[in-house]
Image (cartoon, rainbow, N blue to C red):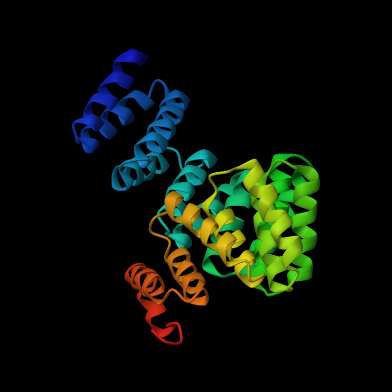
Length: 284
Protein backbone atom coordinates (compact mmCIF):
# COMPACT_ATOMS: atom_id res chain seq x y z
CA UNK A 1 0.00 0.00 0.00
CA UNK A 2 1.35 3.41 -1.01
CA UNK A 3 2.39 5.63 1.93
CA UNK A 4 0.05 8.52 1.19
CA UNK A 5 -2.81 6.09 0.58
CA UNK A 6 -2.62 4.43 4.01
CA UNK A 7 -1.97 7.71 5.79
CA UNK A 8 -4.94 9.35 4.12
CA UNK A 9 -7.14 6.31 4.78
CA UNK A 10 -6.23 6.29 8.49
CA UNK A 11 -6.94 10.02 8.84
CA UNK A 12 -10.25 9.65 7.01
CA UNK A 13 -11.42 6.73 9.17
CA UNK A 14 -10.41 8.44 12.44
CA UNK A 15 -12.27 11.60 11.42
CA UNK A 16 -15.33 9.45 10.71
CA UNK A 17 -15.06 7.86 14.15
CA UNK A 18 -14.12 4.45 12.70
CA UNK A 19 -11.08 3.92 14.86
CA UNK A 20 -11.10 0.13 14.68
CA UNK A 21 -10.99 0.20 10.89
CA UNK A 22 -8.25 2.81 10.99
CA UNK A 23 -6.14 0.57 13.21
CA UNK A 24 -6.72 -2.36 10.84
CA UNK A 25 -5.31 -0.24 8.00
CA UNK A 26 -2.35 0.71 10.19
CA UNK A 27 -1.69 -2.93 11.07
CA UNK A 28 -1.75 -3.94 7.40
CA UNK A 29 0.56 -1.08 6.40
CA UNK A 30 2.99 -1.92 9.21
CA UNK A 31 4.05 -5.11 7.44
CA UNK A 32 5.83 -3.03 4.78
CA UNK A 33 6.38 0.32 6.55
CA UNK A 34 6.78 -0.59 10.23
CA UNK A 35 8.80 2.40 11.49
CA UNK A 36 6.87 4.89 9.39
CA UNK A 37 3.52 3.56 10.63
CA UNK A 38 4.72 3.74 14.25
CA UNK A 39 5.90 7.34 13.83
CA UNK A 40 2.67 8.30 12.08
CA UNK A 41 0.44 6.75 14.77
CA UNK A 42 2.45 8.51 17.47
CA UNK A 43 1.82 11.84 15.72
CA UNK A 44 -1.87 11.08 15.16
CA UNK A 45 -2.29 9.99 18.78
CA UNK A 46 -0.78 13.25 20.04
CA UNK A 47 -2.97 15.46 17.83
CA UNK A 48 -6.08 13.39 18.54
CA UNK A 49 -5.44 13.62 22.28
CA UNK A 50 -5.94 17.39 22.14
CA UNK A 51 -9.65 16.85 21.47
CA UNK A 52 -10.50 13.18 22.08
CA UNK A 53 -8.87 11.37 25.02
CA UNK A 54 -10.49 7.97 24.41
CA UNK A 55 -9.54 7.79 20.73
CA UNK A 56 -5.97 8.86 21.44
CA UNK A 57 -5.67 6.27 24.20
CA UNK A 58 -6.91 3.56 21.84
CA UNK A 59 -4.42 4.62 19.16
CA UNK A 60 -1.54 4.43 21.64
CA UNK A 61 -2.79 1.09 22.98
CA UNK A 62 -2.89 -0.35 19.47
CA UNK A 63 0.57 1.01 18.72
CA UNK A 64 1.95 -0.69 21.82
CA UNK A 65 0.45 -3.98 20.57
CA UNK A 66 2.23 -3.48 17.25
CA UNK A 67 5.48 -2.12 18.73
CA UNK A 68 5.86 -2.83 22.48
CA UNK A 69 9.47 -1.55 22.51
CA UNK A 70 8.55 1.91 21.22
CA UNK A 71 9.69 4.36 23.89
CA UNK A 72 7.92 7.30 22.25
CA UNK A 73 4.46 5.77 22.56
CA UNK A 74 4.85 5.18 26.31
CA UNK A 75 6.04 8.77 26.71
CA UNK A 76 3.19 10.19 24.61
CA UNK A 77 0.54 8.06 26.32
CA UNK A 78 2.03 9.15 29.64
CA UNK A 79 1.56 12.77 28.58
CA UNK A 80 -2.03 11.99 27.62
CA UNK A 81 -2.68 10.52 31.08
CA UNK A 82 -0.87 13.38 32.83
CA UNK A 83 -2.99 15.98 31.04
CA UNK A 84 -6.12 14.04 32.05
CA UNK A 85 -5.06 13.75 35.70
CA UNK A 86 -4.56 9.96 35.54
CA UNK A 87 -1.36 10.13 37.54
CA UNK A 88 -0.76 6.44 38.30
CA UNK A 89 -1.15 5.57 34.62
CA UNK A 90 1.15 8.43 33.62
CA UNK A 91 3.84 7.35 36.09
CA UNK A 92 3.59 3.76 34.84
CA UNK A 93 4.05 4.80 31.22
CA UNK A 94 6.92 7.16 31.98
CA UNK A 95 8.61 4.36 33.92
CA UNK A 96 8.22 2.01 30.94
CA UNK A 97 9.65 4.69 28.63
CA UNK A 98 12.63 5.21 30.94
CA UNK A 99 13.31 1.46 31.00
CA UNK A 100 13.74 1.68 27.22
CA UNK A 101 15.63 4.99 27.13
CA UNK A 102 16.62 7.37 29.93
CA UNK A 103 16.14 11.02 28.96
CA UNK A 104 15.53 14.36 30.63
CA UNK A 105 12.02 14.97 29.26
CA UNK A 106 10.64 11.72 30.63
CA UNK A 107 12.20 12.22 34.08
CA UNK A 108 10.86 15.78 34.11
CA UNK A 109 7.29 14.69 33.31
CA UNK A 110 7.37 11.72 35.68
CA UNK A 111 8.56 14.11 38.36
CA UNK A 112 5.59 16.37 37.62
CA UNK A 113 3.20 13.43 37.88
CA UNK A 114 4.75 12.43 41.22
CA UNK A 115 4.55 16.04 42.42
CA UNK A 116 0.85 16.23 41.52
CA UNK A 117 0.28 12.92 43.29
CA UNK A 118 2.01 14.14 46.45
CA UNK A 119 4.99 11.77 46.17
CA UNK A 120 7.36 14.65 46.83
CA UNK A 121 10.61 12.79 47.50
CA UNK A 122 10.27 10.74 44.31
CA UNK A 123 9.52 13.93 42.38
CA UNK A 124 12.69 15.57 43.71
CA UNK A 125 14.67 12.47 42.78
CA UNK A 126 13.37 12.65 39.20
CA UNK A 127 14.17 16.35 38.92
CA UNK A 128 17.69 15.59 40.15
CA UNK A 129 18.00 13.01 37.35
CA UNK A 130 17.06 15.72 34.85
CA UNK A 131 19.89 17.85 36.21
CA UNK A 132 22.37 14.97 35.93
CA UNK A 133 21.48 14.59 32.25
CA UNK A 134 21.11 18.30 31.39
CA UNK A 135 22.71 20.55 34.04
CA UNK A 136 22.22 23.70 31.94
CA UNK A 137 19.56 25.14 29.67
CA UNK A 138 15.78 25.36 29.64
CA UNK A 139 15.12 21.89 31.06
CA UNK A 140 17.52 22.52 33.93
CA UNK A 141 15.75 25.79 34.75
CA UNK A 142 12.41 23.98 34.80
CA UNK A 143 13.82 21.16 36.94
CA UNK A 144 15.10 23.64 39.55
CA UNK A 145 11.75 25.44 39.43
CA UNK A 146 9.82 22.22 40.01
CA UNK A 147 12.21 21.26 42.83
CA UNK A 148 11.37 24.63 44.35
CA UNK A 149 7.67 23.76 44.15
CA UNK A 150 8.38 20.41 45.78
CA UNK A 151 10.18 22.07 48.69
CA UNK A 152 7.29 24.53 49.05
CA UNK A 153 5.05 21.47 49.46
CA UNK A 154 7.46 20.21 52.12
CA UNK A 155 7.20 23.65 53.79
CA UNK A 156 10.93 24.19 53.41
CA UNK A 157 10.96 27.75 52.12
CA UNK A 158 14.76 28.10 52.33
CA UNK A 159 15.42 25.17 49.96
CA UNK A 160 12.53 26.32 47.79
CA UNK A 161 14.05 29.80 47.44
CA UNK A 162 17.51 28.35 46.71
CA UNK A 163 16.09 26.28 43.85
CA UNK A 164 14.08 29.20 42.47
CA UNK A 165 17.27 31.30 42.64
CA UNK A 166 19.09 28.77 40.45
CA UNK A 167 16.18 28.47 38.02
CA UNK A 168 16.23 32.26 37.57
CA UNK A 169 20.03 32.36 37.24
CA UNK A 170 19.87 29.82 34.40
CA UNK A 171 16.91 31.48 32.67
CA UNK A 172 16.14 35.03 33.88
CA UNK A 173 13.21 35.32 31.44
CA UNK A 174 11.26 32.37 32.90
CA UNK A 175 8.46 34.05 34.93
CA UNK A 176 7.23 31.14 37.05
CA UNK A 177 10.21 30.95 39.47
CA UNK A 178 9.74 34.63 40.28
CA UNK A 179 6.08 33.97 41.12
CA UNK A 180 6.76 31.09 43.47
CA UNK A 181 9.89 32.62 44.99
CA UNK A 182 7.58 35.55 45.73
CA UNK A 183 5.14 33.14 47.38
CA UNK A 184 8.00 31.67 49.43
CA UNK A 185 8.97 35.17 50.53
CA UNK A 186 5.35 35.75 51.56
CA UNK A 187 5.53 32.59 53.68
CA UNK A 188 8.64 34.07 55.34
CA UNK A 189 6.91 37.44 55.92
CA UNK A 190 9.35 39.11 53.51
CA UNK A 191 6.63 41.09 51.79
CA UNK A 192 8.78 43.66 49.96
CA UNK A 193 10.88 40.91 48.38
CA UNK A 194 7.67 39.14 47.39
CA UNK A 195 6.28 42.28 45.76
CA UNK A 196 9.54 42.79 43.84
CA UNK A 197 9.52 39.23 42.49
CA UNK A 198 5.85 39.29 41.54
CA UNK A 199 6.29 42.58 39.68
CA UNK A 200 9.22 41.04 37.79
CA UNK A 201 7.02 38.07 36.84
CA UNK A 202 4.30 40.39 35.55
CA UNK A 203 6.92 42.32 33.60
CA UNK A 204 7.78 39.05 31.85
CA UNK A 205 4.16 37.94 31.40
CA UNK A 206 1.53 40.58 32.06
CA UNK A 207 -1.29 38.04 31.61
CA UNK A 208 -0.19 35.52 34.26
CA UNK A 209 -3.18 35.51 36.60
CA UNK A 210 -1.27 33.75 39.39
CA UNK A 211 1.28 36.57 39.52
CA UNK A 212 -1.48 39.17 39.84
CA UNK A 213 -3.28 37.10 42.47
CA UNK A 214 -0.21 36.65 44.69
CA UNK A 215 0.73 40.31 44.20
CA UNK A 216 -2.74 41.18 45.46
CA UNK A 217 -2.10 39.03 48.53
CA UNK A 218 1.25 40.74 49.10
CA UNK A 219 -0.38 44.17 48.94
CA UNK A 220 -3.11 42.97 51.29
CA UNK A 221 -0.44 41.83 53.75
CA UNK A 222 1.09 45.30 53.45
CA UNK A 223 -2.30 46.95 54.13
CA UNK A 224 -2.20 48.54 50.66
CA UNK A 225 -5.87 47.77 50.08
CA UNK A 226 -6.43 49.77 46.90
CA UNK A 227 -3.46 48.13 45.18
CA UNK A 228 -4.69 44.71 46.33
CA UNK A 229 -8.15 45.33 44.86
CA UNK A 230 -6.55 46.46 41.58
CA UNK A 231 -4.55 43.23 41.33
CA UNK A 232 -7.56 41.06 42.16
CA UNK A 233 -9.60 42.91 39.52
CA UNK A 234 -6.92 42.00 36.98
CA UNK A 235 -6.79 38.40 38.24
CA UNK A 236 -10.54 38.04 37.72
CA UNK A 237 -10.28 39.52 34.22
CA UNK A 238 -7.73 36.84 33.37
CA UNK A 239 -9.35 33.97 35.29
CA UNK A 240 -13.01 34.67 36.09
CA UNK A 241 -13.41 31.32 37.89
CA UNK A 242 -10.66 31.82 40.49
CA UNK A 243 -12.35 31.58 43.92
CA UNK A 244 -9.33 32.92 45.82
CA UNK A 245 -9.38 36.17 43.85
CA UNK A 246 -13.03 36.80 44.76
CA UNK A 247 -12.40 35.78 48.36
CA UNK A 248 -9.43 38.10 48.91
CA UNK A 249 -10.92 40.95 46.92
CA UNK A 250 -13.93 40.59 49.20
CA UNK A 251 -11.65 40.63 52.23
CA UNK A 252 -10.05 43.80 50.86
CA UNK A 253 -13.47 45.43 50.52
CA UNK A 254 -14.31 44.22 54.04
CA UNK A 255 -11.14 45.84 55.39
CA UNK A 256 -12.16 49.09 53.68
CA UNK A 257 -15.54 48.94 55.41
CA UNK A 258 -17.53 48.09 52.26
CA UNK A 259 -19.65 45.22 53.58
CA UNK A 260 -21.94 45.08 50.53
CA UNK A 261 -19.10 44.52 48.04
CA UNK A 262 -17.43 42.11 50.46
CA UNK A 263 -20.61 40.03 50.72
CA UNK A 264 -21.00 39.98 46.93
CA UNK A 265 -17.45 38.74 46.38
CA UNK A 266 -17.74 36.21 49.19
CA UNK A 267 -20.83 34.67 47.55
CA UNK A 268 -18.95 34.41 44.25
CA UNK A 269 -15.97 32.78 45.98
CA UNK A 270 -18.18 30.17 47.66
CA UNK A 271 -19.93 29.48 44.36
CA UNK A 272 -16.61 28.45 42.79
CA UNK A 273 -15.25 26.77 45.94
CA UNK A 274 -17.90 25.66 48.48
CA UNK A 275 -15.13 24.88 51.01
CA UNK A 276 -14.74 28.63 51.50
CA UNK A 277 -18.17 28.66 53.18
CA UNK A 278 -16.26 27.65 56.33
CA UNK A 279 -14.19 30.86 56.19
CA UNK A 280 -16.56 33.86 56.26
CA UNK A 281 -15.40 37.37 57.04
CA UNK A 282 -16.17 38.23 60.63
CA UNK A 283 -19.48 40.04 60.18
CA UNK A 284 -20.84 38.18 57.12
